[in-house]
Image 1: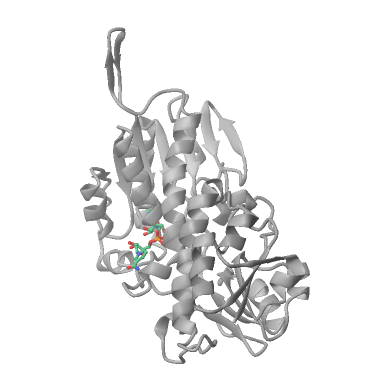
Image 2 (image 1 turned 120 degrees about the vertical axis):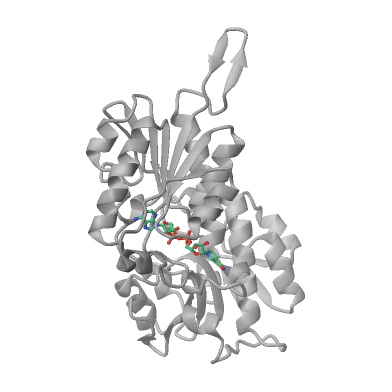
Length: 372
Ligand code: NAD
């Protein structure tokens, strides 16, 4: 197949959907790969590296006119205008954004949103949410340490002893668990909260302390199990008890990293403004949920602000701050997905009965196939 790799056009998007490593594998499988000049520059991949891997360099129009287009973000109107109705598109296409999906369907594309893959063992190697959230969790801790005017580990020096930082992580999914592991490696004392009961063991296995909010009814216990590995909105009574406990822990904390999300909904509010006001001066809150409304209503998307002596980091798209590694993992995710939809002769032939392919296929024949 002819496979196009355009340069991402969204502001601040530094990642690229194929790396010289994945291009080499696609070329070895007899595909023709067209890379837009400069597509990998912000992720530190040179045009010459792509050429050496067997790609041909082209312009945006050339890459977008390919039969199969690999993207990081959903194409905008200008990009869609350059794509053909028969194009197969793979990317992070925002499957909960009905308008966005309609724009892809209207362009006649066959589109696969990889965020919609099920959380199963077989889907792990193509799980873009995991590969990117893992890096975001890591970067969140480094950002916190950058804005925190003190150190993470306990340090005994001739001039006296410095105390270890206390880190609270809210939401112990992929990003939260990586944040716990990273903060622990830097020497912090870590506590974490999650609705899902399975999170306790994972937090503890990384050396964190689980902030327990006991379930008081069968309904709470049942909802907390989530669906397909994802959380569901918890009843108000549980959220109130959690908020009280979290507020207590945050007052003691130096760093709070929030990662709590519920698919297709606004992020749950876990840190109230009063809690921020009660935190120690110099504390830092990194809100990884800021693009979905934020776990703290004070955080501002794309900005680092100070509120009553507390720094609130609302920077978005943290994986783009680690563009080389984020692109390397993302590109491998795409390659693994392609193995499911391209047959032994190198033709696009998506199997109708594959649960991963079915879940990711969001548009075909001018129709949106997913109710967002
Ligand atoms: P996510 O990004 O949707 O949410 C982040 C975390 O926030 C989740 O752990 C969620 O339970 C938590 N959360 C939601 N509401 C909360 C609240 N009110 N208070 C505290 N925490 C709250 O989740 P994710 O990181 O994508 O991971 C979701 C699940 O999928 C996890 O169980 C993860 O281990 C699992 N997973 C499985 C696979 C696989 O088997 N292939 C791959 C990746 C993730």
